[in-house]
Image (cartoon, helix red, strand yellow):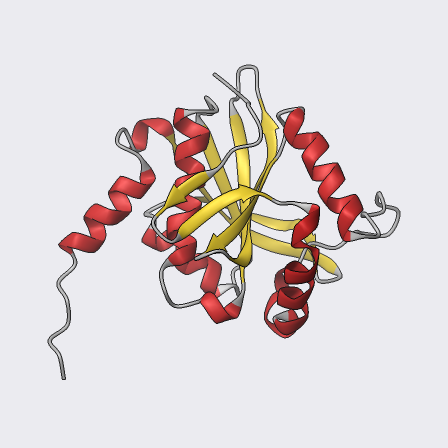
Length: 206
């Protein structure tokens, strides 16, 4: 088991590396450009909750500190060197659980290219085969069809339904819960995704 950080994961044009303060401008532009697409799925702080960082620099510093402590892995997504989104491993629990949850968002300009399933698969494989985790969970609002397609493509099974699970977009929201264990993917999630894509018949050209 290792929780070494920083970590860099590469698969072709897709690179996952630690979110950095130098991402500020690209992150800000992406968030502004995609505001209408992302806000309905963004975590918010309920009344009386702990205040969130007030600047991007504070956010990165907090996430970097948590990464060094082994409780969070905050990955930025790069596509051909361009900032494209984030995949974050949250709530890492050790001891008898060896568990974590994964959240993600992607710039709409990069959508429709199969990048997010690959990115999430790479992160889960890192969690299982490098960081020593045993179970990864993904919580998704029932209305979030884009996120649901990611877990469907990765064949991550639905294990439950959690009413009022997370504070999202200003209120407590229900979530569908998906989970995968290391035993289910002895060769890794990315390898299974590629095998599935290879086996899927391609449509005849029109």
